[in-house]
Amino acid sequence: MIPYLLAIAGGYLIGSSTEKKLFANGGMTEMAEGGEIARTILQQLGGAGRLTAMTGAYNFIDRGNGLSFKIKNQRANYIKITLNGKDLYDVEVGRIRGNTYKVVKQGNDLYFDQLKPFIEEATGMYLSLYKKGGETKKRTKFVDKVDAIADRLDGTKVPKKLQKDYGKRYNREEAEEAGRRIAGAQLRDLKN
Image (tube, rainbow, N blue to C red; front, side, top):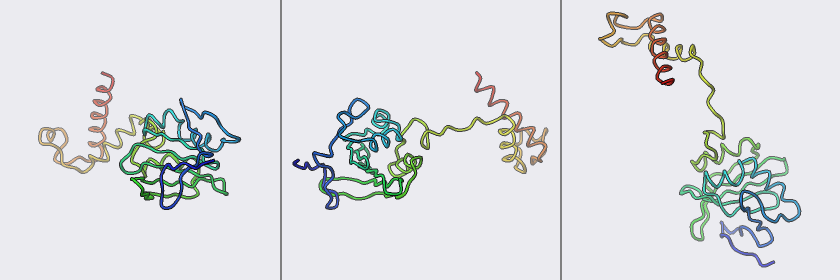
């Protein structure tokens, strides 16, 4: 088939008409034989819909042993992910501008769970609504909050209006009492 030119990248032809298999409506349209690698990579990144919503991703291309796509970003606008012989991923994040291509960040031998954080760090864009590849913060227990506040207050100067209750500096016991008051007030504010 006649190759088409997506971009000239440091002398490399990116894509050809036989490689081009666009993703549409959240998934791949016609898949030539195979395509499982590109589909799996896309699934590991959260799917085409989420990726498009979060980064403006477009021009998804099945590269046989990987996937490439463009994103709408000033820092980097091209991502190529390739499955290597070790069953790990090689990732190239680059910037295409006119006829020039510059590699912004390159990673080799990445596990699937390292793809999102790598791309997020390289582009400065989150790939999901949660920071750091979908991880959410663990709920903090009240006693942990009190301990954290007490650690911060222990040995620090007490505000003048509270010195009649605590003295000039917080000792550990006073810091824990103040920590309980502060954490309790924060919890009340959250419930209201």
